[in-house]
Image 1: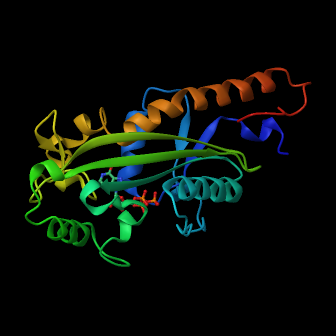
Image 2 (image 1 turned 180 degrees about the horizontal axis):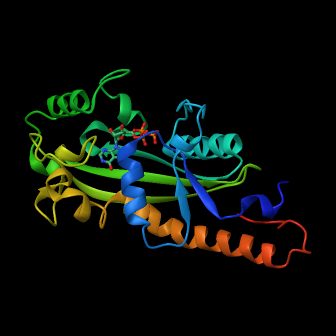
Length: 224
Ligand code: ITT
């Protein structure tokens, strides 16, 4: 077990290679007293193979492998778009729906084609974001956030990434791309997962700082 001293200063590595996610997570968490660092600070960090059957498995695997490599606390996000008409697809294969190494545009084109002619009431979809927090010793904790909406019949908007241009937020009458980062970051699946993760992160931070204060104490038996 790593001693609590090696966690000082309290820092969390964002276990993702997706720059858009990094920007969103940093913006959503700009108000909490935790230092977030990216994988750019860890040359040689492994490309974690996302071969899990669920978002939960992949999020836990990403968080744990990066925590083990960096010897820091790590936060990972595995997200996917689940379309009712497609029985929950693309789901866990959202990144490679149109094939290995495909672009966001390829995925959106394939999705719109698969939904061609489908009436609005059958175009329901949801974004699901699973966030996992891991410590190098291996313990992980996961939470999730969900955003319900509809698949549009054409791409709309320029902002965001992935399926944002084809995902309509009904309350706003706009796609996530049209809403732009500020509005997206106040209602998204990622925002909701991070809100659920916030108390867990703060508690972990308090536990570690508490143990640092009482430097005579041994390592925390349960830190996550
Ligand atoms: P990391 O694994 O390095 O975090 P990734 O881009 O592979 O990055 P995911 O596996 O979590 O991320 O995401 C799968 C795909 O789901 C991603 O490539 C996007 O196409 C889509 N996606 C995830 N979050 C999204 C969001 O907020 N808006 C639009 N599309 C999103």
